[in-house]
Length: 134
Image 1 (cartoon, rainbow, N blue to C red):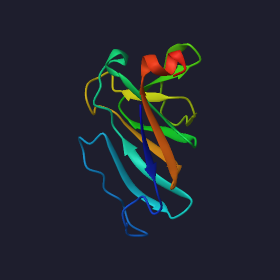
Image 2: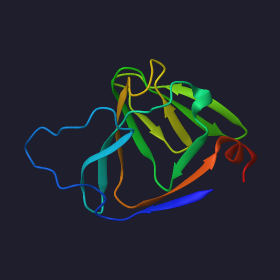
Image 3: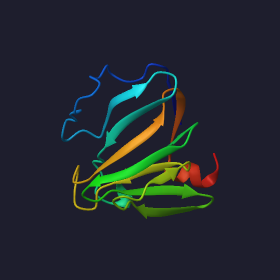
Image 4: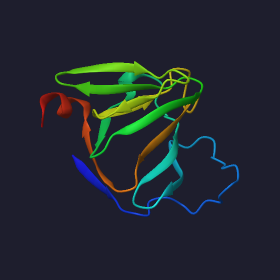
């Protein structure tokens, strides 16, 4: 298990009133935010199958996922089970469970917009550790 602490400001300076540009082929990129409140990023998993999601993460705050393009699914550890949640365009998903993502069509074939707090901690564990409650 490992922990990562995110402190404000946790996002790059971004021009206001302009289009923001993400870089293709990146797993996670923070685009902008509001110090002490929220940050917004693009999530494009490299994994192509649920089985490839060996490590799951859980934040000390909820995350809001919205599918922008392609296909992105999340593997969630809930109780003693893993389940898959396929994101749907235009239907936000509020995630609090330990999770990891994959793109069924191949690495970076889908992109989700993610909104989360500007200050939080993330705990990373293997899927099996989450299921055992370790």
